[in-house]
Image 1 (cartoon, rainbow, N blue to C red):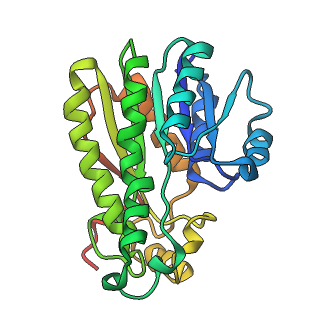
Image 2: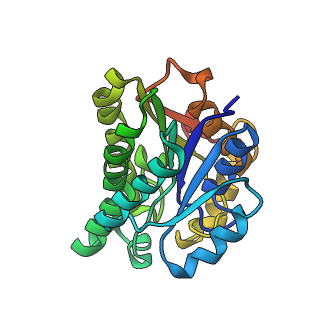
Image 3: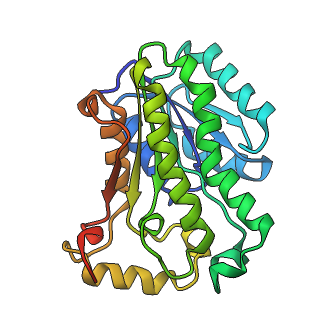
Length: 253
């Protein structure tokens, strides 16, 4: 499905991450992939995960560093010549901002969360779009806490709301270049990053009990949706937030 297609995935940190599930689905469909790691501490993890992927490109890129962002896309251009899709699976807020009351969020925590979790989508898209010479697809990861108040999600819910609004504005900007921009609203998954949210175990139990499918979503299902959105099968879809949460978002309780 994606043979001779080239993509870059931001946010792979370990084998349990949604970004890695997406990478497996995309690689399984024949895509050639590039990856980032934030710093030297995470380099070994990413290189270990991708070592069996033919010709994978692994590069350092902290998305708050404009020079590193520019360098990554220069390397992609030199290696692949063009880009067909980008997966944005990045989010961060200081741990203390993910507990207690949102009203207590500090200015620094707010700016950090919005910068890394939302603005980075625009920054990466700006560099990626010129390489999408044959059209392309950009996919990011969001959560229902952008739409409704989720306990302890706090500033991350605000950041994800900004990410979802950015999805629509970017889709409007880039549609004339045949570049589609969508987001996946995944249900809660017990990733390492998600454990930073207080009472994640209780959230997983609550969703599994109330979702129509009576279970939590699996990373593979999110990865397969990323594959769909990066493939020609979704060629008429842009500016959308696709829920992959076993139906939880349709429930009133």
